[in-house]
Amino acid sequence: MQQQPRAVLGRGLDSLLPAQGNRVVQAKLETVRLGRYQPRLAIDPLRLEELADSIRQHGILQPLIVTEEHDGSSSWYELVAGERRWRAAKAAGLDTVPVIVRTVDNVTRLQMGLVENLQREDLGAVERAKAYASLLADFGMTQDAVARSVGKSRSSIANTVRLLELCTVAREALEQGRISEGHARALLVLRDVDQQTQLLRKILLTGMTVREAEQAAKTDGRTADPLANLERVSLEGRLRRRFGTKVQVAGGRKAGRLIIHYYSEEELGAIIDMMLTDDGVSRETSGGTQRAD
Image (tube, rainbow, N blue to C red; front, side, top):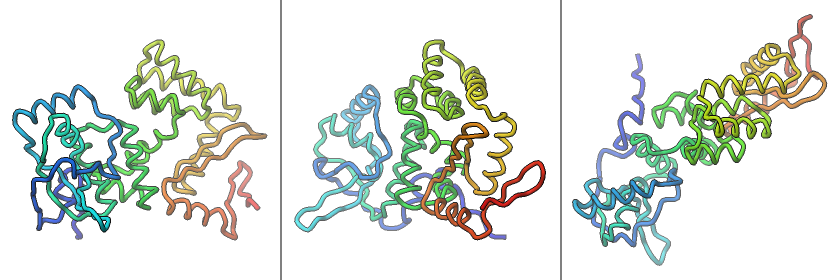
């Protein structure tokens, strides 16, 4: 029996680096630049100052991970992992920092930034969602591949990426910590931006628990959806099994929207292939099976 690969996240950054050839050097801080694929969007100023104080007293105990870059006329180091230490070193006034110089591709750079921050649980939900979405869209990875690379389940990746579907004000509230990830998932039950915004206001004003927000979202969704809820859920389930991805039916019997979600160019291509086959897409009815022409 073939041995299953171990989750990358559980093994740490070492699993993303070759076992041989680590080179630790003292680099001038001014030559280390922020990486192109850093997943972090915000850093708590108080925690950063605490780290800077520690670095002033004890120095940097764990080297930064960098790559060496050239443009023909100059060279520099690009940060792969260790953004908090890099920023704290600048705040502490250091001239040099210890770095491990590695050669890694762009996908591995982003993976390493994710792994480092996820292990410390420092990344916010929206930061994780954007990083996963970048792996899916920018590097053409599948959800399964992303899940394996960071030691998460495929459903966890899909649910996290879905947070990017929140309306702008709800996404900002999640980034600012004014609502929890559970509240955000409750808001995603509602397809209409106005409904999301109204429920968000209720959550912020009344201090709703996640369970209360989930119940309110279900109630609001039924009120705004003329199509019988059970019938809609059944239809969405059949379409989800057909296309292998999240499908939403919004509206009533006479008019509405059919929303098919995809998370990579590969998934989009597969969906289009299924929709454009000569056989068409079968549509089930209570009286039998019809063919959609």
